[in-house]
Amino acid sequence: MSNLNFKMQNKGKGQGCLILFGIPFAGAGCFILWALVISPIMEASKSDDWVKTPCQITKSELQVNSDSDGTSYRPIINYSYTFSDKEYTSEKIDFSGDVASSDMQAERQYIEDFPLNSSRFCFVDPDNPSDSVLIKDWGRGIFKWVAIPFGGVFAFVGFGIMLAGAAPWIFKRKKKPFHSKIKESVTLNPRKQRISNLGGAFFVMMFWNGIVSVFLVIWLGGLINGTASGFFEKWGLGLFLTPFICVGLFLLWNFYKEFRKLFAPSLTLTLKQGLSWRCRDLIDLSWNIPYSAKVDHVMIDFVCKEYATYRQGSSTSTDEETVAEYSIYDKKSLNFTGKCQFTVPDNLMPSFESNNNKIEWAIRVQTQGDGPDADDLYTIELMESSL
Image 1 (cartoon, rainbow, N blue to C red):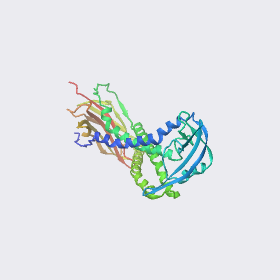
Image 2 (image 1 turned 45 degrees about the vertical axis):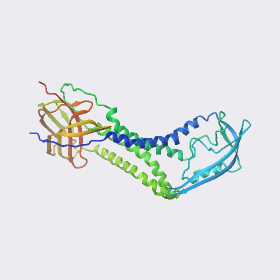
Image 3 (image 1 turned 180 degrees about the horizontal axis):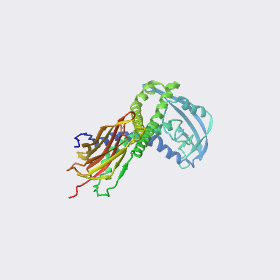
Image 4 (image 1 turned 60 degrees about the vertical axis):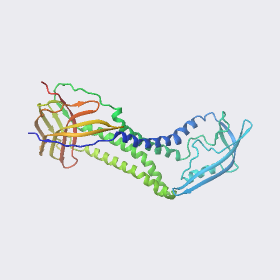
């Protein structure tokens, strides 16, 4: 007799709330990228035909602003030039706009390159001579490379949260009829599935931690070099980065778990009836365990999961429930091979998928012993019983 266990797991998620929560992150990231990266780059790309013109530096000083958040520096450089017999003045250094940074040495370099009362060259827009720059670049120093990952983190997180919330609307489940297949023996090996999961975990971990590491290096570099001043530069940035670092550590731990699964025993499962079953079918299962594996407990279950998507007002929720679990095999054994038979219970809901509901059956294979434990899932198509 098979043992039947019912396990209920309610994982409802307010999809509408996720979208609202992700909008501020995405909006902040897009604004930063547009104001500090995209717009300056577009302006710089239009300056190819600007005319190189002699100019005179009339003001050159480093502006220092100190407050509770720290100290920032901004070069103030004014210059005058003559174009088409008319005199003009400007204070634009490049296309980055009126920005300041905490890197005193980098900002001071502009003062040294354009000292007071020196003669230099600027670049003038021939269509609008009042518009000019000293350097045809879209950003100053390291600031421009910080703006990209800074805005990218917010945009990535925000759109990721919004996509998770909008997934039920974007990827609507279509009714998927299940058809009878030729019953033939199939062998299931978890190796490819584990490698695929590991690759996905590695990509997400490297993408997230690669962006966060840029800010972490800047913050730690300021502390080590002594250039950080004020509460924000010394500790505020570290506090701001703390939740992002915690997420990165979680992704690192998830990658480690997926990596360990590669070394879990690869129990090769053979099903003579294939992956399409009906109620009352007698299923023959056999398995092989590598001789190098130290396994003393094998568990094979036939499980059913139900997914239901519904709306509550403007929000959409998806519930996932493990509604049934039938034990196929559960014994402590040191044998490297084994086999058993399992009769599919009667009156079971067949596999089903529609816009808002889904019934999914699967075989779950678990092992216990010395070293990593295996826990692999294989989808089974449970068809309607023939009359």
